[in-house]
Amino acid sequence: MPPCLRQQQALRRDRPLCTLALVSRARRDPAMVQHKRPAAGSPRCIAPTTGSYDMHVTMIFPGIALPGFDSFGKKPTIDANFIDHGLASLSAAAKAGSHTVDLIDLRMLRDWTHFREEIRRRATKIWAFTSWSLHYPDVVRAIRILKEEREDAVVVLGGVHATIKTQQVIANRLIDHIITQEGEISFVKLLDTLAAGKPADRLIVGEGPVLDEIPWVDRDLFDMRGELATPMVPGMPTPFVTTNAGRGCPFKCNFCQPAERAVFGNRIKMRSQENVIDELRYLKERFKFNSWMAHDDLFFINHRWSREFCVQYTAAGFTEPYICQMRADLMCRYPDVVKQMAESGLAWAMIGFESGSQRILDLFEKETTVEENLKAAAMCKEYGIKVWANIMFGAPTETRSEVMETVRMVWKIKPDHLSSSYFTPTPGSGMAEEVERKGLTMVDPFNSSNRTPNEAKMKDTDYEWLTKAIALAYDGGSEERLIALGQLPTKHQETSCASH
Image (tube, rainbow, N blue to C red):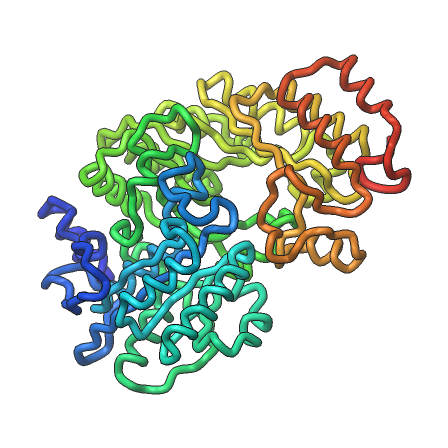
């Protein structure tokens, strides 16, 4: 058994769990940081080699692309309030490896001048950034400001964008070290190397950890008040927390893949049910949460894992409602598991129905059917699970009649929450490469993770008409209104949802 597991088991016997060093470190003025080792007996799943390293790192969360500066706790959206599990996992790994960490969350700052002030307050040498493609322009600007203020700063960049657009990141000479793929092991090794005064590679391919052998994410890194007060679905009881059960995705939906496989590899990785339950125990003890969300794609991927989780969740005395993502085809294949999850507390199922047109589902390589979509929604209604319906409009070559099929499907599903989006060419995805090759995209490559239906994404798509169709999906409409909408004059006669 790995030392990490033995230590966590010992801690489970000797509660309270708040003794975990990976979760509890007092917040200090970053300018006055005292570098201390974790307490004896603390989980050290990722340990330094030899010697006293005690490197301090300032992490930067750049998530202002959607909510903007000064948005934390002031806007009731997940983008403004949720913690970043990737960065929090790196922080936990670094702390378990005898390093200290603090955070600058750009969402909590007034503007870029405020960022300069925060840099000047710190004596930090190592600065670590994470980045989605959506965040990369802000990351580049932040790094430039950092180097202006602190020429000797060592900049480490990881995350999705560093993995799928590695050559672009390499071209930025202000970035000293780049870690692709998963970073927990490699980031700590890099810190150990730098602390020892040894040279380190500029480009580092991350090593994928065994998830049960790394610390739980560091919820001391972020101000948790935002997430605790902002449930994914309005009306879910607060306090609210999020966790992850695994990494990766075995499916090949080409509006997403192969980007996710580039980060996590071709095989999915799951935490054990016991590991997730133990973390929930800790979160309950510390934050007194009343609802939670599994914030990954895998909670329902393996029906055996899901069955056993329900057994352990109930046996542990949990009754708190939770949210997870599900797939319509798997729900139809394992309805008994869906029922068991409902009985254990599953309150909301987030389902990527995507389209009511089978041709569009096949175009997306979704590997689901319209019939499965309808059956899955009906199953949720039967078992008392609320439906969060993810629908994507404006796919390449999508016709008006296919959009109308999707609207009709939404009417039949009657979701409790409809989340509509425009097809957006996400960097690293198969469909993005195709539409870019054909010159169809209108999206800034650094705004291509923003799928909100509020701006044009693709050429030759009648977004004015599409907006009206989406409005009918939301308000229920009528068949007569839908038919009338379909008969409106087209703006473009050739492609996409402009044609009949």
